[in-house]
Length: 156
Image (cartoon, rainbow, N blue to C red; front, side, top):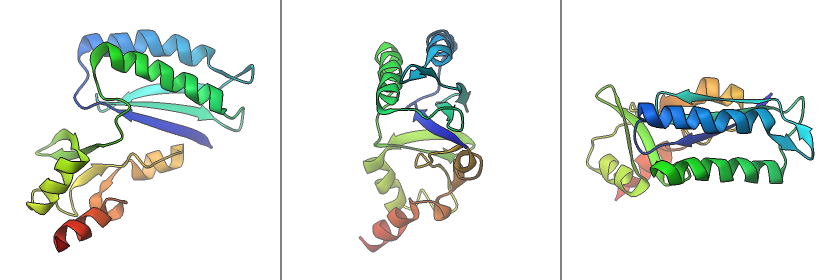
């Protein structure tokens, strides 16, 4: 199974940002190691807004230090363009066939106002492996952890 990390941007990547991400992340991923052992890893850009990094843990597991080095690399990319890649308070969903990314606070306000329903397609950042990415990354809110927000906001 492959361990997956997804980093979401608060906005779409520009062409220059895509080039920069590829030019900076590719050499890192190809040389990424855990305890001196090479990791079988790769990355992809998803929906022009997400960076998905995965490691084949059947070959070698990522260690705390290797995960820290990935986080530092993502932070370097984020610092270059102010993308919010490490902001865990961002929520992404589909609205009018476009991806919208807002703060958790604003997401709750949108639910309360009725602009977001249980049928809204939501990007589930609470995934951790390749199987979950395939089946649970883009799902209806009613099928995700965010369904709890729907019930909670409906009561207030």
